[in-house]
Image (cartoon, rainbow, N blue to C red; front, side, top):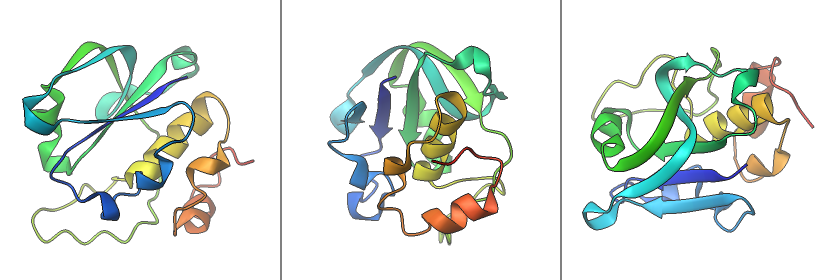
Length: 149
């Protein structure tokens, strides 16, 4: 499975929970800098309003758009392909969010949490995805239904 992470270029990389995944096999980062378009092909798109992720989604590549919630609709317009929107089951974030600009969704996860959960549910746990995430243990403890290594 290839993981495509499309990033909002306005989001600071040093604050991004996904930055430590750069260079990891099977993970590709693309920035939407300069009006760029991205051809994602056919893949599962982690989206809060999709159908729930299921075993039928196994074997498909994955898309995660890494941006502030309020920018998701705008940034998604720059992505071409056959995107299959899928949401995760209800999970609890461990990330201490404090937005000064907008209200975060109640069920929102840090990007790395959502990515780990999707991969764990589709293929099995990949602990290297959470290896550099400060709140990894708290996230896993809060979500005992997720597969672990």
